[in-house]
Image (cartoon, rainbow, N blue to C red; front, side, top):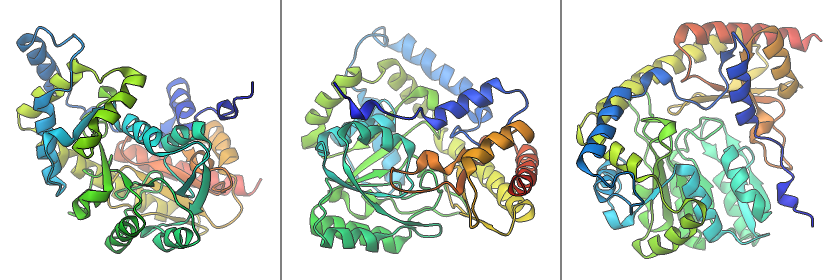
Length: 391
């Protein structure tokens, strides 16, 4: 028996975690991890202790925790979204929400429209269904090319959904312009195609900007995915979806096939942490610190990188996408940099869908290193790029 979907390259992102963990002295500008120092460890410990003390069944199988769902309703109000607890679907991270929606909406071998470079977790989600992928480009300043999306629909392509990370898209870091947000939602409504909005980085916004989430602009055609991974800690594996109440039963059945339910203990601990009312102060600290680190990285790219390189200038999230205009195999460059410069990044091919090419691109994480290490890392990387080009 031939299982075509099992023929997968190992996750480059997972490999990079191993490399950074095993190689001494590596400056990690690669992995998609937030800064460890900003985890609210004591506050979470207090929340966990409170949960265990107040409810002896915290460690038992339990249905979704209603107080947490009420907290999420309040969080969504900050994103301009009005919803009710019966529309909140608890997930084991946003990745699970994406997986559940894909299994509900995408038929095997069906058509799908995606950006040429995309979140690697989506690739892993859709691959078992072997869809026919239609590509659209992404502008470094304004995001997904919605004109190309519309053209494909006019040609008769009928995807079951649009996937979009409108705020600090992974891996590029660009936020979709307001004009394109409205255009995509108009297309979705006209052609009756739901939108999966991955808003994992929607709370990490800089320069005083707060981008509209798509769900706030058109609640009827958007499935919203949120996560505590980047604003509290990824180890919690806790996220949520905002979906029609009529679909929660279907989503629950699909979710039960993977993990039965999300950790009741984690739900109660996070809810107790949110009860303290310090969450938004914590988010403001993250915004301030990550904005400062972004600024340092942008300044260093301008100082140390060659004129053949351009890069995104994100207003949120954790990543900067670098594009070299000349021939540059960043997969080979990565090996050279790890060996000779002790700097790690993610090469562009890790995010490129089959049939597309991002071999001249790379992704940098500005969130997980302190400013002095960012400066040293970009200086070493810039020198390594110049040396590699002479080989």
